[in-house]
Each structure stands twice: as structure tokens, then as C-alpha cells.
Image 1 (cartoon, rainbow, N blue to C red):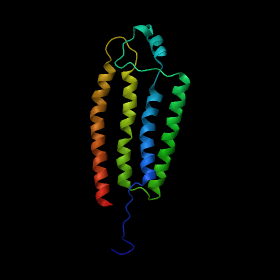
Image 2: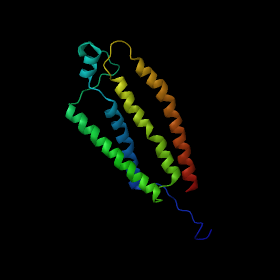
Image 3: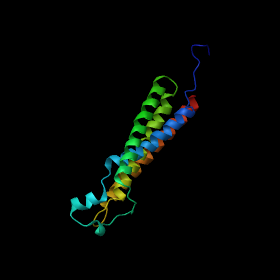
Image 4: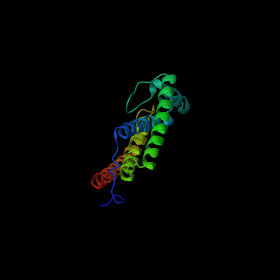
Length: 159
């Protein structure tokens, strides 16, 4: 190989790994915040007292200001880290296969955030939405994990 055909690693450095972790955590919290409705509002809209609601998972309720602070902060972290990772990919500091592996992982915490909203929703009767969410998100998660692992293996072997 001469100087023109030498390949660089393009493996993610510490900065990209930290940004990737922040992107994954931020995207899950953002998806939760964007789909969340306060339990009192759900019960009032459905026409039953909140004390009579069933929920699959009884979660603690944060004050509205804390929910909004957490949600907006996570959304900002998600957007900023996505921009930084796209810039690293475009500049050649992050290989395309590594970027695709990360891209395959991003929907997983987002689905988890939405599933958490469904699981903790105050309802009357069975939570059919939770069963449907698990039936849809479970296989989708497995497919995305396989894609991410395959892309990471290909990237590792190439670099």
C-alpha cells in the first residue's frame, strides 16, 4: 500500500463514545417527554377519578417543572450530540459503518421511552396498548440490535 491507499481507522474515539452514550440516553428521555401526558389530565379526559385508575407499573410523578426541565434538557442533549456526531462522520473522524451501527441503536431507547409512557398510563381495565407495544417493539429491537452488531463487526474488521 502506498500513501494514497492507506486507510485510517475511523473508529470512534472517547469523545464520540461519550457523545453516543449521551445521544442514546437523551433520545430515550426525549421520546418519553414528548409522548407523556400527566396522569391527572388523562383521568380527567377519560372521565374517571385518578384514584380508580389501573396501571401496569405505578411510577412516581415528578412536578411539572421537573418534567419539563428534564425533557427540554434531554431534547437539547439529543440534538446537540446528534449534530456533533454527524459533523464527526462528515469530517472523517467517525467511519460510516460505526455511524450506521449507532444509527441502528438510536430507536431502541426511543421505543423504551414510549413503552414506559404506555406502561405507566392510568387506565381503567387492561392495558392493551402495552401488549401491542411489546409485540411491536420487541421484534423491532431485536432487528435493530442485530443490524448494529453486524455493522460494528464489519467496521471493526475493516478498520
